[in-house]
Each structure stands twice: as structure tokens, then as C-alpha cells.
Amino acid sequence: MKKIKFLSLWFILFLFTFPVSLFAQNTVSPWWLSLEYGKQRFRSGDYGNALLFFEDARRDRRAMYEQMERDLINLLSIGEVRRIGDSLDRVEQYSYERRYTAASAAFEELYYRIPKTSLNNSASAALGAIGKLKDYPEAEYWIGEVYRVEGELPLALSQYRRAFAMRENLEDSGFGTTLQYKIAGVLKTRMEYNEMERTLLSIITSLDTLWVNASINNTNGSGTSIPYAQASASFARVAMTRTLETDGVDRFLEMYRYNNSAVEQAHRLLGFHYVVAGRPSAQDHLMFAFLIQNTVIIEELMRRQFDFRFTTVPENRENQARNLVELSEIINRNPVLVSYIEEVEYYKTAYYLAASLYRNGRTSAALNLWSFLAAQPRAGEWYGRAINQLRNPHTEPIVEMP
Image 1 (cartoon, rainbow, N blue to C red):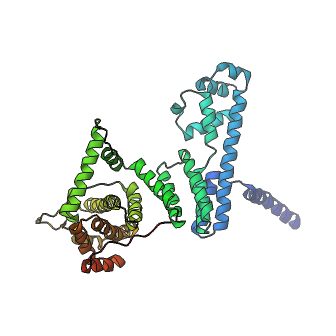
Image 2 (image 1 turned 90 degrees about the horizontal axis):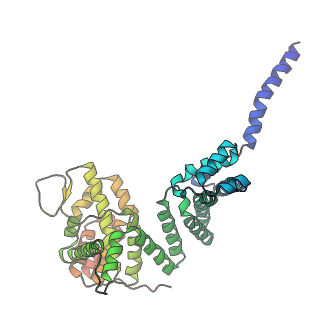
Image 3 (image 1 turned 30 degrees about the vertical axis):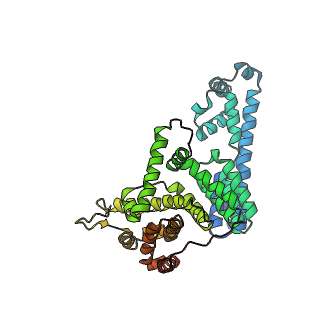
């Protein structure tokens, strides 16, 4: 009897545990969860399994939306529905009333992803929209990341471009700019400089109104009237350049602020590229990059200390920086800002801005910046090079690009 009771207890436990085990082995993760599992594997260095998860995420999302697309096609193919016409509201009502649950679920998923109002009450537009959702740019990007870390740069570049082409589906629309920077980085490594330049200029054209409007105005020689925004942008850029060239960097940073972090890297990388190529336009790009960098720094200090000021006018206050040297002393006491200036290559930007000014004949402004760097031992290479420039000013050698 005891043996029978023991076997019965064992059998009951088996019934409770076996289905759970079987379920765990056969459960298919939703596509978004597969992507997260892939990120975890990627960050731990398990690139092989990360790639498998990313490919699963891409495949499973496509399969889900392909099925939903078929469900909507089946609904729209019904004779009664065809007679309804293209009215999305009436087609959707028919789906719910006649209990076409798969099509109704497809409508709900679609409205979760995009606003229903954007479809203009068109059933055909809804069908087209659900079809576009098959693309998964985030998965394409992460597949590209795996290829990048494994040294497969052509494949990585292809994946980044594929993800960028699908950017309408990005959950974070701003990530499209990140993709462009990834593309530019691979192009730089592959020494495809013309394509790199076009990619970086595309970022600036899309996101930097001050630069674009000023450029349009500066190149307009037709004698036609120019919109106020363009004229204002051009005036600001001319005034900024004049202040930097004639009054020096400290007065320049006192007078102007420009917080457009999205384009800082594009201006900086183009500036570095142009300065070693001996192109005069390096100065404008590096001026914008350095201004954005210092705007971020000054605004962060003002956020922490509301009465902080960057001003060349001596004031009886503690929270003040009268020049770049004093500003750098404050930066060096703030780990967050130290990390930031390393990220944006702050000292390198300052050095090459000076080099571009010197090449363009603005010697005083160039020496002003090199003097600042020569007081910054933490600037490393740029500290030493600035000291050499002060001893023997010279233009940077031009590097021929392939």
C-alpha cells in the first residue's frame, strides 16, 4: 500500500512538472524579446548566439506581420467587403461584427504601431501599412553590430544601410542619425572618404538649420529676396566667424551658444577630414563643433549652479569662468564633464580649429587657442603639439586622400 501511495504521489508530481518543462522547451519568444536576449548576449561577448537571436527576431517579426497581412487580404477579398469600398471604418466594423478575429487583431496591432488618423480612413492604406511593418530596422542594426565587431565591415555596412532604409519603422526616430554615424564610421575605416563626407553632410543638412540656411544665403547670387530665417542664419554665422577671428575664442564663447548635439560629431569629423586635406571649410565646421561642445559644458554647469557664468568681464563672484583656462579647471573637477570632453575629442577639436584658423591667415586667433592648449597638460598629444606650434608656428601638412 505504501508503495502504491508513493507511486501515485510521484505520478502527480510528474503531471505537474512535465507540462511546465515541455512548455519551457517549446516556447517561442516574441520578436521583441528575442532582440533583448540578443543584446544581452552581445554585451557579454557571446556574438554567435547574439546573431542567432537577432536573426530570430527579424524572422519572427516578418512572419507575424506577413500573417496579419494575409488576414487582412482575406478579409478584403470577401464579396461583401469589396462592395463596402475603401472605407476603413466600415471594413473594421464588418470585421468585428462578423467575428473575423484574426483581421480584427491585425487592425488593433496596426493602430498600436501607427496612428489610425494617418491612414485617412483607407482600408488599402491600412493593408499597405501593415505590410511595411514587416521590416525590423533594430534587428538589422544589431546584426550589423555583430558583423562589425567580428571585422566583417562590408557586411556591417550593408546591414547599417539596410536598417537606415527602414528608418520609418524605428521605435526611436532619432536612432536614424545614429545609423548614419555608424555608416560614416565604417566608411572612414574603409577609407571611402567621399561617401563618408556625403553621409556626414547629409546629417548636417537634415538637422542643422543654422548651417543650412546660412549656406543657402551665402551661395545665393541671384539678387532675389531671401527669407528672413535664411538671412538671420547667415548673419549669425558671419558674426560668429568675425568674433572668433578678431576677438579670440574667449569672447566668441561669451557671445554665442549653440546646443545642437546631434550634429556636433558630424561637424567635428568633417572638420578633421578637411583640415588634413588643407580645405578652408574646415574652420567653419570646427568652429561649430567647438561651440556646441562648450555650449553643452556651460549649460551643464549652469544647470548645476544657476548663477554660473562664462564671461570675460571680471565679476565679484565665485561661480565664474573668464576664459577657457578657467573653464578647464572647473571641467577637470567634474567627472561627468571630463568624460564628455574625452568623448567629443575636445582638445583635438581645439587644436585643429587653431590649425584651420592659421591656414586661413587668422594667426592671432590660432595662437590664442594654442596658448590655451599649452596650459593643459591633460590634453596629452594636443598639449605637446600646441607648445611646438607656439615655438614654431606652421601649417599642418596636407594628407592626400585616396
